[in-house]
Structures are given as structure tokens and as C-alpha cells.
Length: 454
Ligand code: ADP
Ligand code: ASP
Ligand code: MG
Image (cartoon, rainbow, N blue to C red):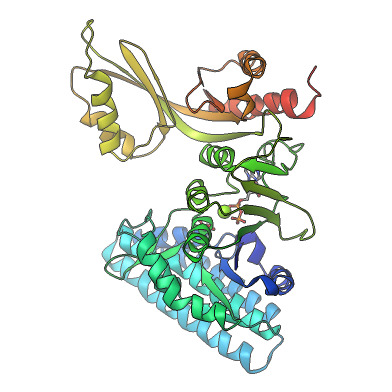
């Protein structure tokens, strides 16, 4: 069997849903199952609606809800030809909005949203899209069957960033998905949503539908996982920063994981690990150009792979420099610093350490304060916010000294504040003031992916 995951823009409106149906139809002989995201922009709107409800801002909540309802109603009207099926779907969608309204009302009364309540709100995005997509597929004659994501995507109880529980998900997928696949049906499951050990709704973190797809692919032993999105595949840079970015035909699991981690939003960073566990190829494809080859992510990028694959980048980080006060060797210094960050749930993007001090690059946000407070008083701490990180990735960085030299030379011209070579071996990361990040990415891209190397 294969897993087909359609992202938000691939189910954004009726015409996209119909295009997705054609993609599924041509793949019926390969026993597909479908994972769908919320319609494009819906998760953001739900987050804003929850915020407005907690703040008691009726005047902003009402238009947000109206916008959400309008989008879903259009999708229902445009993707079903009419008759009984459309009527039933419209009623089901109305009922879900009624539930959502009640939930938001209770947030307004409480004046706050716990992570558990927020997950309950956010799950409506995928609940609605999976329902609409299933009905539209059925209307087009596909043997689609809706399955509630909570029944298969079993997770731990960390609301907002739940970890899939692979053995529970495997049992559930075998119980609920395999019989449908064996009967020739096409199961449709909302991505991003799961259920914790207590059965309550959890979510996997933003962009988590990719992770749903790869976990289901893993537990079902899929032959391939296809990520259908709005670009031609994994590109040599973020196309919003670099319009000249080009599609990579093949990248290795390791390269894809690193690119995703450092900001290539096209794949969720955690979505590669399940594919690696069972060596399942992942293909990233464009819903608007279904014939194009896309990017194939697999164990090895192949002999013809370029020395450098791509440059990823992410704004919104800060550099935290920690200095031990005592000018003597303190073997416990680095572990104590790392423990404080770990306890605050912060995973550093980069760590550069010397005998007297260490600088960690971490995402900006509330957790940082907790980490700083947890450090021993005698340490001196300096936080520099408003930074961005870039990461240039390629197997040539490990294999060829000349490639490393050229990357370092090109970076030197961009004025980085920190550079790290040699961590994973196949990447070089660098930190810049946020306003210079885009230019640095464009410059590296010009040097390595647009000009023919001398
Ligand atoms: P979906 O809704 O299909 O999950 P996302 O918005 O999550 O789509 O991811 C696709 C987007 O990722 C693209 O539209 C593109 O702007 C962005 N992106 C950032 N870096 C890259 C990259 N290196 N390759 C491809 N897309 C990238
Ligand atoms: N709808 C969720 C989000 O916007 C999950 C996803 O799209 O992958 O983050
Ligand atoms: Mg995504």
C-alpha cells in the first residue's frame, strides 16, 4: 500500500480537492490511504479564534468564525455535485461548527485555554477537512472511507506536541485500517490529530500532518509515502526567499531531516525518522503538476547526487552566551548549562563551546526565561535576540575538503556571527542578525546553486 498526504493548499478549495481525487484515482492499483491537513490557513484561524475567545474579544471572534464557516461551506458546495450527499455533508459540517462554537464559548467563560483545550479546538481543522474530502471523493466514485484520526494515531499525552506511540498506533492501524485496505477501500484520515493515553484529543505540533503520514506508512509497512504539496518538491532553498530555487531530484534521508529541522517547511522535521526505520521512500510532489517527478527522499541520494543539496533557514532564534564566573577549568560547566536548557524543554539549534564559555542558539520564546532562571547564579548570561540561522547541507561537506573551503569562503563574505562546521559532518550552520538572513541565503544560493562552480 502507499500513503498519500495532501497538505493544506492541496485541499484549499473545491478545485484542489477535485485535483486530489484524480491523483488518488490514478493510484488505486497501489492501495492508497489518504492523510489530509486542514484547509489552507484554517489552523491559524482556529488559533486566533481560541485567542480571541480567551480574551473575551467577541468583535474579533465572530468574523473569524464567519470566515471559517464560509471557507468550509464553499468547499462543500464546490466539491459535491449536489443532492442528498451534499445536503448530509452540509448538516454534518454545521453540527461540527455548533460544537466548536460551544467549545469557544467555554474558553470565553474560563478566560484561558489549557493545552488540552487548545488541541480540542485545533482538531476541528482536520476533522472538517477529512470529512469534506471523503464525501467529495465518494461523490466522484472513489471508494473513500472516513476514519477518525484519534482511532489510529495514538500518542503520548503531551498536548500541542504529542509524540506518536508507535506500538499502540500499529495495533490500531492493523485493527482499523488494514480491513478497509483489504476490502479495496481508500481510508481518509485527518493528519496532525491524535489521541493520548486517556483518549483525549492531542495534536502533533504545527506541520504535523507529514508526521501522521509517515507514522501510518511505518506501521502499515507502506511501499512509499507521498507528500503532495504546493511546490515541485524539496528545493535548493526556500522559494519565498530565493525565487531561483530549483527542485532536487533526490536527497538522502539525512539531508532531508537536516533541511527540515533548519526550516525547510515542506517536510515536518520528525517525519523522516519513521521512514528511515523501515527504509520507506518518501516522495514530495506538486498537486498542481501531478506528472512532475518531484523529489525522492531515500537512504542514499545516489552516486550522481551533488556535493551540496540545499540551504535551509529559519528566523526567530536567539544566541545565549553563558560564561562560567571562575577562571579555572570546571568540568561540570557544560553539562550544567545543557541540563538547564533541557529542563526548560529547549533543544539548541547550535552549540559552540570553549573552555570558559558556551553559546547556544535556541528558538525565541517563553521557555528561554525558564532556562536562564535554572542556571546557577554565578554564571554570567547574555541573550542576543532577533537572530536567524541558516544551514547548508550536502554529503560533499564530509567527503571533500575543497567543498568545505568553498562554503567557508562564501560564508566569510556574508558576515556571520557564528559558524559551525563539523557537527553532523554533512552541514554548515551560521547565525546572522535576522535582517541579514535572507541576503546571506541568496548569496550562498547564487554561489553554489546558480553559478557553475569553477
Ligand atoms: P503543506 O500545506 O502542503 O504541508 P507547507 O506550507 O507546510 O505545505 O510546506 C510547503 C512550503 O514550504 C512551500 O510552499 C515553500 O514555501 C516552503 N519551503 C521552505 N523551504 C523549502 C524548500 N527547501 N523546498 C520546498 N519548499 C520549501
Ligand atoms: N493543519 C496543521 C498546521 O497547519 C497541520 C499540517 O498542516 O500539517 O500546522
Ligand atoms: Mg506542511
